[in-house]
Image 1 (cartoon, one colour):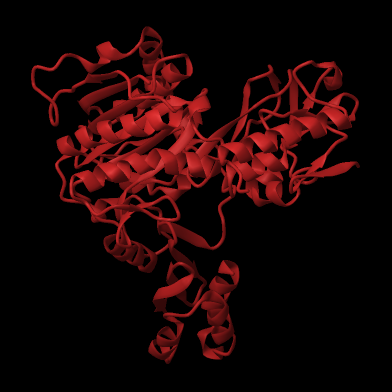
Image 2 (cartoon, one colour):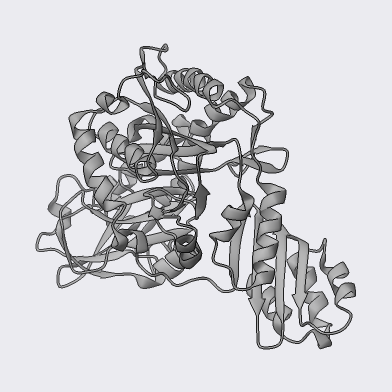
Amino acid sequence: MATQNIDGFEIRTDLVYDVGAHLWMNVTQDGIISVGVDPLGIETFGTLAQIALEAPPINLERGMHFGSMEAEKFVGTLVSPIAGLLTERNEVVMADPGIVERDPYGDGWLIKIKMSTDPTTLPYLTSGADAVIEAFEKRVAAYRLEGVLAE
Amino acid sequence: MELRVIDFGRVSALRSQTLWHAIAYGVSEGAPPTLSFMTPATPYVSIGLHVNIDAVDVNACKRAGLPVFRRMVGGGPVYLDDDQLFFQITLPDSMAPAMRSRAVRVLLNPVVAAFQQIGIDAELDDANEIVVGDRKICGHAAGQIGSAVVVVGNLITGFNHDAAASIASTPNRAAAGMFRQMLERYVTAVDADPRAFMEAAVATYTEALSSLQGEQAGDVSYVRGRPPFGEPDAGDPLASLTPYELEKLEELDRKLADPTFIRGESRRTRAPWRIKVKSGVWVYGHANESATAVLGLVDDVITEVTLVGAGRDTEKLIGELVGSGLPHAADRIAREGHMGATIAQLVEAMT
């Protein structure tokens, strides 16, 4: 598991990302892809109070709602970064959303999607260590410039 | 920067929810940022998207003739009636700060300014609660609907504490009583003219959104509503909605009244029982076969204690618990053999 500290955020560089949506994807086995929230997304969203995830099975399209998260009375929508069959949701994080903050790349995964396409080939996703690092560096810098993140 | 302002006037309880949800979908599809107002013709209960329906005393609501509607933004169960003017600010997600707590703060600041303009000494506290002193004067919730961000809230000109307390599901009379008492202490109405508040909010939001965009204030299309706060001869505010918003409105009228949507998914409830009065103010309760313990906490300090069936020397123990934090309370209770397990279990669960 390769990680890189990018301006205070521990980012796994061996995963596929939808950087704008703050979601990571990990191809686990037989085309099953686990999806979770990256540390930068958790930081911008705030302390999670609730997570709701759609019950499987559902055929997801890219951009389709698969759940929601709530922090400080704000409900944000979770939209799928890829098309595929939602096969599993993490019931544990629904009962204890704090797990997503404590272990975003591990026990804090959200859903699993069965997909026939290799996500690293999709042009709207980011993969490869160099590209991931560059994308997060740009995103963190932009957030700091906008005052989203403290200096 | 264009701002659309719509005063819907008095609308049905259901429409007081579905109208602003429809606007959010409209803004997602290109309608301008919108500031909307309405007041419900009849009282009802609104619950946040993730709230377990068990948090509401559904039978009490039925007896009181209060419908329950689930909204698609956050927060807990609230009692709403025609002594409240609802406001909503809806804008494209791209206009709102990416840090969500900051977005809510930025979008509530104009409300605070509007309160101040009409002579209410309101402040936005560190938890994004609009308060006068330590009392909450305005509820709020927020969320992303489609690709729009919406922040909703209310001007409360009269607050029915009894009704607001009665809709909450509480484990026993002691907990219900303390919740009612703390609502009275920490949530209050303000003596304000809703029409003046609306006018002030239009001005403060126009300025704030222009500043957010780095632009000069632009056109404000202001659709003035019908009574109670508008004019009797005002046109139909629905005419200011886009065809897409009207289509979504009909769809939302069905969705938000759908019993399956209202019931929602059953979620595991936290132990022990607790209920939020306002940010930082909670009532916790726990009971076993021999005793009931209810604690009121303000910023993690115990301010109220009710013990039922707890044995001798209750007054002394209450006196020692009030004013203490939970670690001290846990330590104190550990030395209190005669109290039995009730309050010890409660404090252990809370800590």
